[in-house]
Image (cartoon, rainbow over the protein chains, first blue to last red):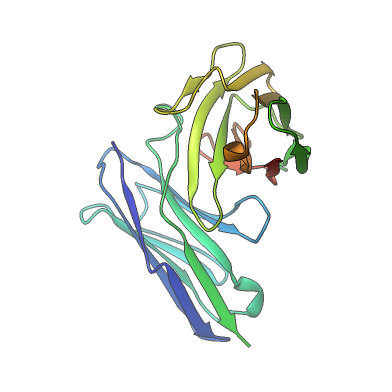
Length: 114
Length: 117
């Protein structure tokens, strides 16, 4: 089955710097890759997603890149702010035409220091 | 749009009792809902997939008789933890597919913190 590896497990940056989180997946049939932000005691919140027919997607300070050949995708946050501090999860799915199940990475705790 | 609610947000119960958690999609019809369990500082572990009007599909290792799932309508799924024990204490989160964000996009509820004494 699908396996998603996420690195690093913790990341500390200074406010204003960029943060990059990387994930690799094992199943080449996966075609949908969302990223979630989870604050303490809350449910995950979708922040950006990308499908396998696209190599890059950007939404303001957040961008995601996908390399299908290498089976890895990355989250880029620019101009980080203290409110970006949270746990970030990547995930992979074969899409709702399959089971729609998401396989999650292990999570990255991002700390943005003011 | 794409709001998913859970009730209750927090519950404390005695060992041996049953607890029901509700998951509702507030502004869309969810063709499929999922139930996850999350331990402190860990990732989300999928427990089961719930489709309206049919039996839930459980992941390997999840006891279907202990974690009863009912998906009675396109906006409501329930998870009942039967005969709860302290080891069932966890953060339970549901998600739903079918919102306008796309057929593959899962939107998550705020979670339910279960503590079994």
